[in-house]
Length: 84
Image 1 (cartoon, rainbow, N blue to C red):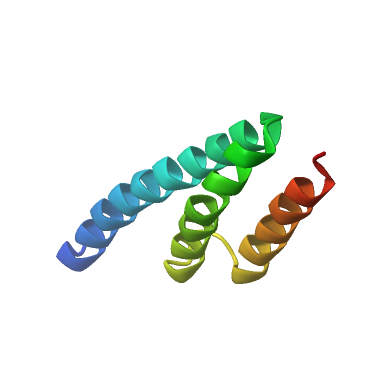
Image 2 (image 1 turned 180 degrees about the vertical axis):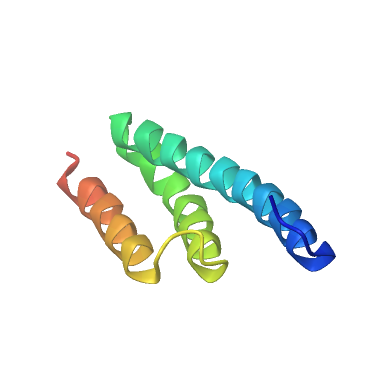
């Protein structure tokens, strides 16, 4: 167990930030999963800007890597392009 006040506080902060980051990462993963299940092109095109924004925010806050966000956005855009 930590002995210094600062290290005890750091443990508390890390725990709360980890839970916060996990929540947003999981929420985004679920949104991407739901987006991939879409079959209607118009609905997918309407959702793409919000998905891009969500991924960019996670990358900006270092919850996911910026290249991962870019790759996911690219794949989602390609999925729309392949829809009939």
